[in-house]
Length: 358
Image 1 (cartoon, rainbow, N blue to C red):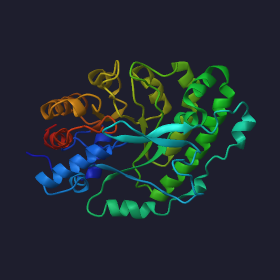
Image 2 (cartoon, rainbow, N blue to C red):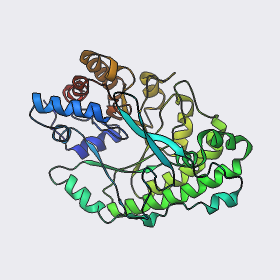
Image 3 (tube, rainbow, N blue to C red):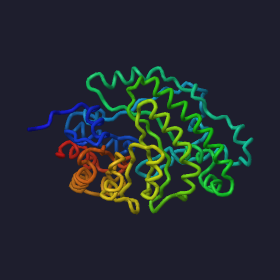
Image 4 (cartoon, rainbow, N blue to C red):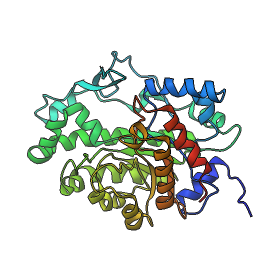
């Protein structure tokens, strides 16, 4: 007897509770489509199916975002609320506005220097539109709702500079911890206000700090335990008190750090960069699938940009087989879908996820 079709929200909820669903849930948490690839996908969808990207994805995605509006002081072009300025970098077939050219705390030598830097306030955001956004999303069918960006280490090194922040962990831990403490204070209050505005309808809070490279951790486990974990514990405890779950993002080869992340209080690990060293989906499910859920996984480094549509279909089916049985998995790309990714491969990912039986 065929299973009844579930709502987007019920499908996500059951997966997070490690229960079987009618199909694998699908999301694009912390992912998107780089503009040239988006334009090609839009063109193909309009030509072949008579819909655009938004219309195509609307009935597919089970988890969608809401965010407060920025109402704080005017920001200089390319500058975020931490005072970090980025510039656009072109790589021929696409571009990113993501290269940092100004680290406002690069020259800080003391705690006083940190405290003098104008950090953002949660008052700079308007949370009153969140209930209306949720109501609009759920007008036709209830969805899983995620919000936020609870970065602590990353926000700190954006302001300090990556090399300087890593050095601080060893030679000046008081300074980098002062920066992270101030970031954590903002993040806890910022996300508390979002959750309260959501009135219990926000299911997931997106947090995370990249702690992995393609080949291993960016710092020692001791450095993570002593300097990063305590702030995420504070943030995660607040999120759990408000009835939401924590989605933790880290790219790279992070298998060695997963027990620490679990102790930190995360519920969902993403984006699952299985092209990184030691990141094996079968091992991940066997080792941690009883306590963690997983999101992402479809390769944006190899299969989606460089494989065939059949390669994508095979990978999607294999990920569902390894991670999705008995719940605990939300499928999506392993990060932003890159420029040059064939539109047929993107469609093969979503179409196969919809069609694959659990």
